[in-house]
Amino acid sequence: CGVKFDKGTQELLRNRLGILKKYILHPSNQVKLLDIGCAKGFFLSLCDREGWQTYGVDISSYALSFAPQYTKAKLTKLDVSQEKFPFADNFFEAVVFFDLIEHLEKDEFFLNEIRRVLKDKGTFMLVTPDGKSRWDKDITHINIYQKKDLIGRLEKFGFDVLYSEEERGYSVRIIPLR
Image (cartoon, rainbow, N blue to C red; front, side, top):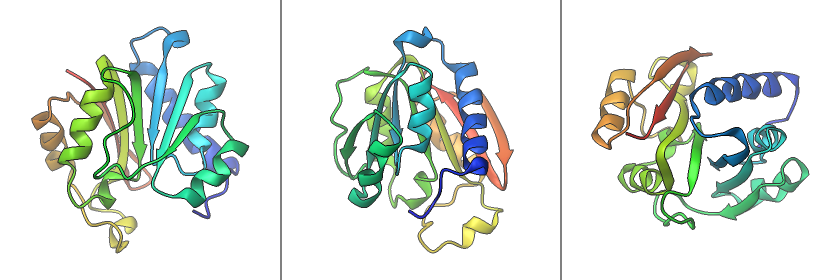
């Protein structure tokens, strides 16, 4: 968790936020956002500035210990691969997870939990390697999806893909529920 909130990271995350904002259908002052795998809360800090209610979960107590320096989000330690998300059904207008799904051995539970907590017409955004980047050699990446396979997987869970783009060897996908 040695990532710094430097100018390059801020620019990258501001770009992701700009993409996400284009697809959120709910009024800005009513957005509740969940960042899954939030680490130190860098993305959440940008969402705080939008006036959104922010929530973050991460498996790392170490990373979460730094997050209050950057965000006012409500933070929870959680293993998303097997623990139920501690939120009500249809709670969030937006859910994001960056560089996470490739670390999960099985994603069924995880994707079902996202569907459960995301409101109708809610939006979620994910970033993951696309099977052709230098990051694919990371030994902790145990579940690399080709673009068409991931889109098919997400559609199987009832998500529609609105947008996809390459980002430094990654594919960014924004998916609204239903």
